[in-house]
Amino acid sequence: VVLGDRSSSSLKPNGPVEQYGAFEWTAVPLPAGGSYCLRVWDPIKGSPDDPLYKSPLIQETSWLVDLAETASWPDVIEWEVQTRDATGYDSGSPRFARASRLPR
Image (cartoon, rainbow, N blue to C red; front, side, top):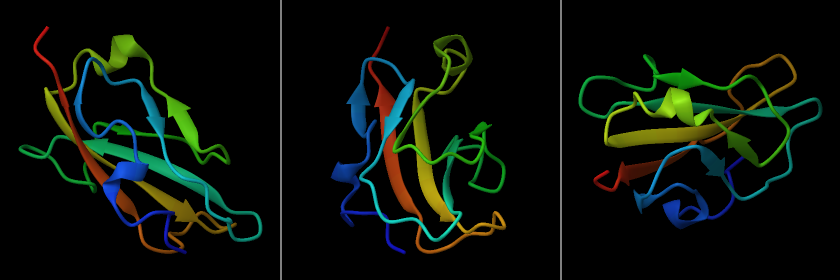
């Protein structure tokens, strides 16, 4: 399963943003019993395997992270959304984006 448009333009936030919080992506058919998982990491000090944030398994094409939590995140983040099968294992190609918070 490839998550929608291959360009990162189908993912939000992407590029300069006022704040992090609302994450959105293009819907794709999920495998039976499948879900999405969102991971956010620091591209300088972290990796997808060591995320700042990992969502629960969700069926929606958006996820809201509490602004109080995102306030401590670095000014540049990378994030991905991955489809998961019914057992919770990765099911297809993840989609990546990079966002940068505008100066406060």
